[in-house]
Image (cartoon, rainbow, N blue to C red; front, side, top):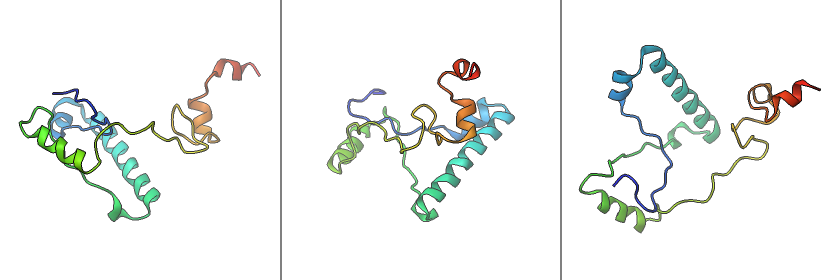
Length: 117
């Protein structure tokens, strides 16, 4: 039941034991830094730490998955959304502000052409 029609692919779910069992310590630390950066930016963007959601996760092969899908449908939380909106002034490739040095240095569409100027 892994590919369910209408299911939104909005989340990345990583089992904590998979992180500790399959990633070396330096990658575990990198993942923690990435997750911390996301949390900080969500708090900044939302302005209220209490407004950050937590989520329930179910495996699609569970016997009750169809029941959960029915509840989601009844509440308008099923079917694919439109394309992910890119905020004005942000790069569609990396999501960074188009004017930052980090974006210019790391996401230039044609660095060879830029270097020839």
